[in-house]
Image: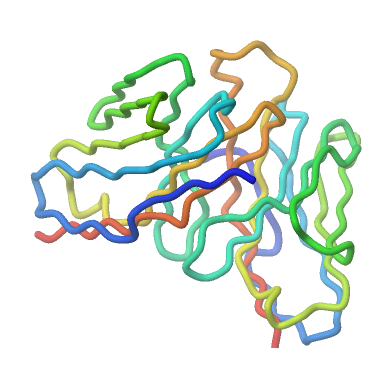
Length: 110
Length: 118
């Protein structure tokens, strides 16, 4: 089955950039997503990228996709304490099913 | 706000009991998927409904079952609850059968139902 992997933790200082990395296995995935989850809450869609793109920018968020290496990253510019959360990478197949990584816990220190 | 609502938000059940969780999908969406998120893990796909029929299932036993109604809302039923069923259950709403690249391809998750089995 599909396998999505992420590093478990990332700690940055407020104002720095954060880069969260993800690798996936299914080369036929149509879309790749980033979701944010705050404690006790559901999943908040941050951004997604279509598999024929290699970069997408949305305000402070930049997504880079290296399809050859099956590597996805999320860069958060000027990271704020409110960005502290768990970030999930997910691939979505052609049948609308999502396969999630285990999540990266981002800790932003003031 | 995603427009996807789940009820109840929290639930405590005893081992062996049955539970029904509910999800109202976003207006205009025709596909509902259910996910189980155990503590410290990513969500795992349970099953998906499209136009009232099950359209794919993950690695979950038959005591996990579901329904989708004509208005595209959905229920997740779990029979014979086990302690390991304790988790956050998430519902996702999306629109299937459309060309890629449109905003409609976004899938939105509800806030989840936290089920505790004691």
